[in-house]
Amino acid sequence: MTSPTTDQKGAIRASFETARATLDAFLADEANLDAVAAFSALCQKTLEAGGKLMACGNGGSMCDAMHFAEEWTGRFRGNRSALPAIAFSDASQLTCIANDFGYEEVFARSVEAYGKEGDVLVCMSTSGGSPNAIRAIEQAKSMGVHTVALLGKGGGKMKDMADIAIVVPEATTSDRIQEIHIKILHIAIEAVERSLFPENY
Image (tube, rainbow, N blue to C red; front, side):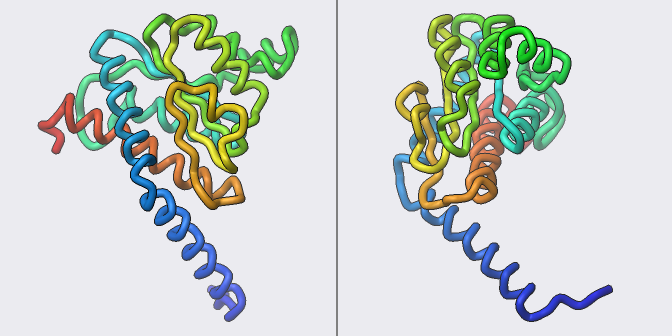
């Protein structure tokens, strides 16, 4: 195995320290914890009422949306009944909508197709300015679908559009922002599961 150079190890340590500083900055603001708690409570209320959770994002944020959905339909900490969640990630649907209506409509059309009043849409955007995520929130709000936005870089336009907006502070790069987003998703899922399936804990 090739040994890393001193410079490589220094860069690696610096990246870990930046990641830790981003998390520390997030935890330092009590409003962020309140927002995550509100997100968890909304997911639980929706599931208890027979609604579904939907998620979307671009690039790495789409991967996070898919991760979010599979944790509900599959298993998180322990076996329990499957819960309804879907990520807008089907390549044939996305490319069909993009081809027919434009890329800005790929998520909005999916909200129109799958969303019902009282459901939850979770949009992830590290900039807060993704046009297709903005259109998805607009469509959701027109249908009575609750909206949650996980954001970065100040939150952009989406910050004031979503019912619950959670903005990662300080981080200026997508990787650091997405690292906090996946923590938020996991912790929200855990909070709901602890309440609905206490036997798993």
